[in-house]
Length: 380
Image (cartoon, rainbow, N blue to C red; front, side, top):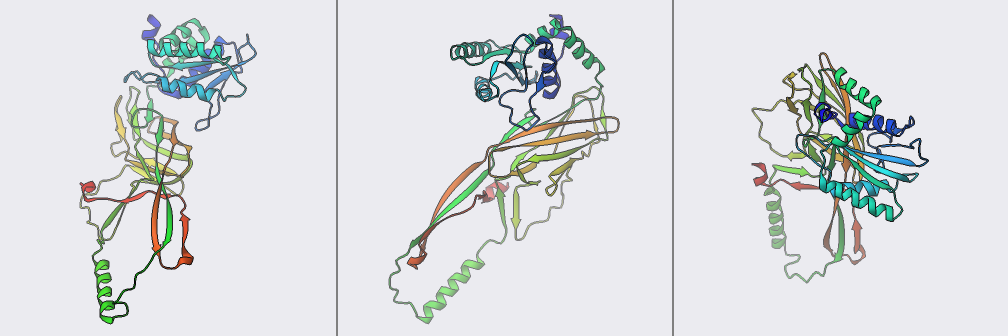
């Protein structure tokens, strides 16, 4: 088909969401069609919604952008997850459309058909799937959307950039580790020591304690696994070089700290005679950052990776958003990235023997950072 060869996919999920809103707004003859909420908010499985002119109940669209280079597809689990979310959309939906930039896949289409049949029997909303080839057909059949999309492609500047996480997506799930300690203070039964009170024994005991103190390694590195590590990937998707550029970052949401490392060394530390010059700068107090590449030109289709970013959220399930703005000599662009935070809280138990029976008790600590000492083999 001619259109399928000439109509390229939108370059990012925001543009794809806008295309779906325009397309189904024309199909439904619904000028009131809307995007659902804003980035970072819970959307109950629905990105775009509206009431068609020929109906009196809400229809919803879940937009799934998949890049054409890695041939990623919707998975059955992903479909199930979004359908469960959509069940809580209010008012309830009559139909839910999955719109994706992925190519057609017979197995996924079968999954959706069976799910649609199951929902009809259960008096739930219908479920339908439109892959990129299907969407191209619909664009051809709807003149307003066709003109809008073709003109937006032709008018588009030769400058364009995509900023993503390492896997080329705009959404990331992190699993920071935390721990909670429960300590049982139990009574200790102390047997009679025949040497108790003997001055020679007391002197020997003091010498042993002193030996333990001075034998402690004063050079220690700890790793804090409450910080999650990732980097940002900058891809020049246009056909013109981006010159003298830098990127400004704003972090919003349940974020406790930002850092360029999750390690802390105490004691004597060797001086690095060849320090690496950073290109990513993070400011924890304002939850902002900057990416200032040392190579100031990014040619067409080239990519650049930032330094590692270590983000510590609060120990509860939540979401965070990274708003970004690229500014260059002749071009600027902005967007946002979504982080899903799913903490793993480990409970540890400890017994401490005490002599005083009145101090027998159980104590539960607050949720703490998950910090471990770095072993020698980890340093290599």
